[in-house]
Length: 200
Image (tube, rainbow, N blue to C red):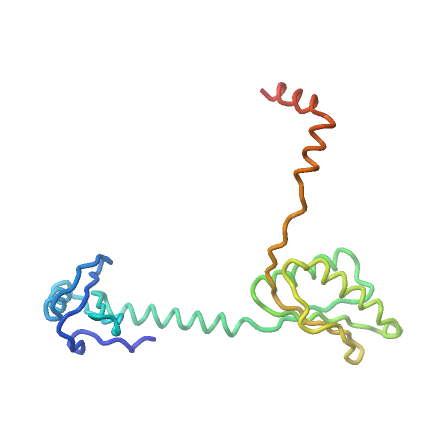
C-alpha cells in the first residue's frame, strides 16, 4: 500500500540490489551509491522488496508512484463496490422480443461478475398460475447455461417469483461441426469444385 515503502535515507541496509529508473537491473551495490545515483537523476530510491537478500530497491519518482498506487487502490475499491446484485424483472406473458432483450442484459451483468436477481411479477389472476413464471425462469436458465449458475432456486415471494443467478464460466465443447462439413462435402463435392473454379 502507498506509504509502506522505505525511501532514500530511511533505507538502513548497507547494500541493495538496484533497478534503475528505466527498469534495468544494475546488480548489487552500496546503498549510498544507489542513493547518490537516484539523487543525480532528481529521483528517489525506493525499497520495493525489503525481505529479499539484499533488499531490492528501485529508482523512481516516489510521489508519482504513491499517486499511481492510490489510484489503483481506488479503482479496485470501486470495482469491488460495483459488483453486487442486479435485478431483472419479467412478466409471465412477456413477448419474445422483450424476453431476448432482458435476457441479454442478464447475460451482460453476469459477464461483468454480478449476481442477478430474476423476478417474475404476477398481476391479478396470473398469481394463480405460478407454473407460467417457472417456465420463464427455466427458459432463462437454459439460454444462459454457459455463463450462469442457479444460486437460489425459484421460489414464490408474495406476488413475485424470484430466482438468483451467479456468474459461471463453463468450458463447454462446441457442437461437433466437422461431421456436418464432411457430410456436405460428400453430398455435393462437385458444387464446391465448381464454386472454386468460378471464384478463381
